[in-house]
Image (cartoon, rainbow, N blue to C red; front, side, top):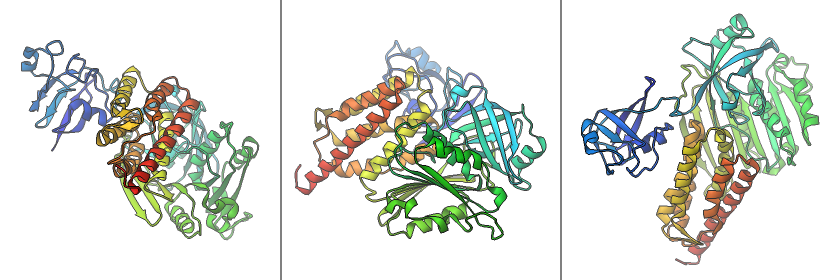
Length: 523
């Protein structure tokens, strides 16, 4: 049974979490991405000592050096030991800011405001604390003017390494943000930006890449292109089909032209659906896709656009003799982000069919998803996990502190405690601990969509199936658990990618050998 715990911080902020009766308050807080103070987790140091204003609980075990019996009688608790019997109100001896409670809200000033066409506005923002914002190409922010009770969600059109961030906005009659940008906004005005949000982002470019953009869905595609220009090892072709309803909806064409020189193998063209268009290509993007774009299915497709476009492309790709191995999409509506500036809980939908698996994550006005084909129960699961991990490391590499790395290493050692050389000593224990280890960065990122995407992978189920009676494990895995942490702490991203790829290969190899053992009837 879950109970509601109110965490009251010193700065007057209160956060509510759910805590199961067999779960400590500290673990529940950490699972909710709230870093309340703790250190030893054993009831020995007293770092997590807090005061319980109301509620019943099991105080757990502790030593006098951590908390005296007199303090316990007064209502003090150790959150690393306390488990609830009822709802509780707990005073936490730190501020909500230091607790790092998930997606952050930043303040920025408008430095550029340009009407690109009758339907599109571009604006640029200089973030006051730019170093604190890490985002992946393709992600979005919830953006609001000061002192309003609403926000709208817009994808970055700038690359993650650029000092000034930019956004493209489709002007909607009667839209709050549209009216603000056209009638009120001016250079120098401040905006509140919360995020980054979303699980639509560029994965490691291994296969040819096909980018599809509809209208201002061009924004995340441009961010992806900017990121690709920084990849000195990029050796795959990149193609873009940019669709719009009317000629005036096509924007940033001069900027797109520059990518022909900035990328080793890039080209693009535009398609306009208006029958009166003077554009060279008319119709829909699906009318102009060829084998050059689809590579007999050996291609990664990224699409951002309105829902009808996404559904049309999805159907078109499904009908191909060899559909793409990976299809990532984001669809949006004018209602995107309607509500307050707070991060909105996401809803996850999983769909499995013959030869494919789809996971979608929905928030107001925004839906991101991915479809993978092939063996949905083994190799693709681990490849998808690796791609997500490479992305989440980029998000958190500048956020992690000494306490985070201490906890990360504890989780690694816990997983490694079930490994003895090339043997698994306890399959169930290892699978659970390994999941905690891999889940850590997603929890710490504060990005609900990415956490949901990770949670809904089937890697745990695959491991449960394969490793139930297995003994063998690739011996490099234990050391890789620790080396990955060291590389992240050193911010050596090339080394991180190398280790994650090797770790993924060793995980897949372990699964394959376990399945071989099952087929041969081995224990």
